[in-house]
Image 1: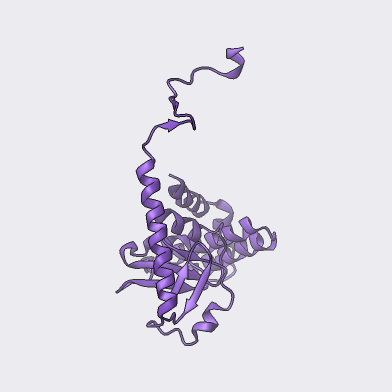
Image 2: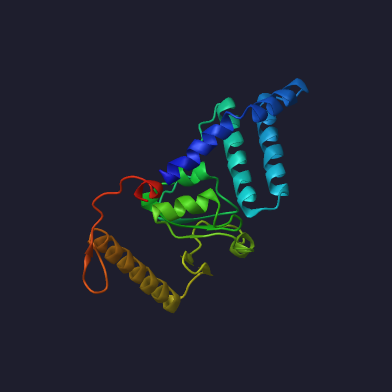
Length: 217
């Protein structure tokens, strides 16, 4: 439900009359429909970024995602993310939530973004999917140079570490970290159904929760 709420919010943005009116005004001024929708989205996104708050900056990416998807449909293009032909780490400046959600999870090893923030919806979705993600990695794209799709990376979503062309000891260290994390997750999942018990062994059971504090007085 929490992840679905991201796209419910995007649907609300898509129906925003202010966005529609801004696009309509641009069309009346001579822009084509596709350019008008993109321009309106950028205008609203810039307003959010100008507020300077991290949460509003993160939402600016959502506005642009919505306007880009509408523009794509107007242009006859079905929205689609990159096709992952093999297990891959996706590297980008940023990822809109619709693209993040459309990535083939069985081949998505991780996400490394030069921009973004932990409150961005791409990062939230990655956490929900259990996909390692590192965001705000300044200089990442420049370090990759020509963007060779065969370049090797090691990333740690817990520490934010990214290593280009990892050597054997680094690979082993990251593999140990992955195994430890998977072990922790398996133990947490196994213990999730155990009864709540105090330190002295008394089982805590909630049988009912009826009424309000005022009524109990």
